[in-house]
Length: 446
Image 1 (cartoon, helix red, strand yellow):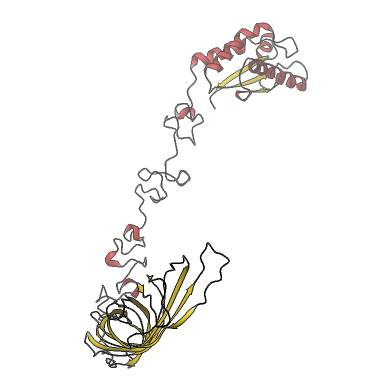
Image 2 (image 1 turned 30 degrees about the vertical axis):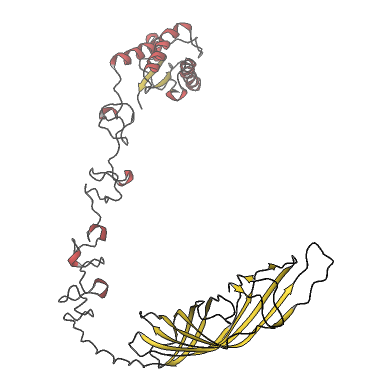
C-alpha cells in the first residue's frame, strides 16, 4: 500500500494522510487444475479467503502528535488462470484475472501526545469500518510454480506438492473510488494437489538372450577374448599355461611364471649371477649375494679383492696378500738395527749405543704407516731354561717399549721371547753363544 485517505468514514476523518503502508496477510483456499497428457497448456481455478492487513508509517498531526493507522481488508476471491508448462521438469507459469468480493474493511487509528506536553492524556483509539468501499473488484495476477511428484510416476493416483509465487499488480485493487490506494501484492505458498493421471503401461520383460559359448569355459563369446580356447573367467576366457595370472596372449613368457610388470616374464638377471636385477646393485656385472649382486670389492684396485687383501688401502701383489712388497734396502736396515741392540749383562736394560739404530727403525715405521714390526728375543744356553725364557721376553719388551716411547703406536709392534730354544750357532763356543744372544726384528704389512 502506498497511501491511505484522511476521511475513513462519516464519523472519523484522520488529521493526517498516511503513506507507504506495509502488511502481511493470509491466503487459504482450494484449486482445480486440468492439463491433458502430452500438452503444455492447461487451466487452473483458485478460490479462497484473502486477508490483507496493512500498517502505515507513523505520521505527525497538526498538534505535533504521532499517529498510527492499521487496516484490515479481507476478500473472498475467484482466480481463473491459463497454465503453461513448457518443460518436462514440473515448472509452470500461469496468468489470469482476479475477482475479489469484500468481506471485511476495518481500521484502527491511534494517536499519541505532543512530546512538549508529556503530562497530557492521549486521545482514545478510533476503530471502525472504512466506508464507500467497492463490493467487487477485478484485477489481474501472474505467477509460477513447481510440481514435485510424491510416489511412483507409474501410479494412476497422483499426489503433488507445488510451491508457488504470484504477483498482483496495483491496477484494479483500489478498494474505493474517492481517493487512490495503490495496492501491490506478492503471494507465496505451497499447494497440495491430488488427482489422477494416465497409468503408464508396464512393458513386457525382454526376451532371454541366447548366450553363445563356443569353447564351453563359462564365458560367453561376446565377453570372451579367446572364444575358441577355454580359459578362466578372471582372464576373460583366455588360458594361462604358467599360472602367473597373465593370459598367454599377453604373456611374453607363457611357459615360465612371471610378473605383470615384466609382461609375464620373471624378474631378469642381466649378469646371470643368480641375483635378479631388482635386488642386484650391479645388474650388469656378475657378483655375489653378500655384496647385493656386486663383485667382492677391491678398495685399493690392486687386483686382490678385499676378502683376500690384507692391505685393502695399499696396493700390493697377490703373492704378498695384496700388501706392498717391503724393499730389500729397508729389510737390510732393520736387520742391521737388530744386530746393534745391546743390553746390560744378564739384564734387559738397553745400552745407549743401541739408540741410533733403533731410531732408524722408528723412521722406517713412521714413513710406512702400513708396516708392522715383530720383535723376538733369544738367549744362549747358559743358565736355567726358565731364567733364559724370562730374560728373552723382557729384552724383546724393552725394545718394544723404546719404539713406543718414540711415537709408534702400540698396535703396530708385538714382541715375544723364545729363551734358548732357537739357537742359530753352536752354544759350545764363545762365538756361537754371542750369536745366540740376539734380538730379531721382522717387518710385515699384515
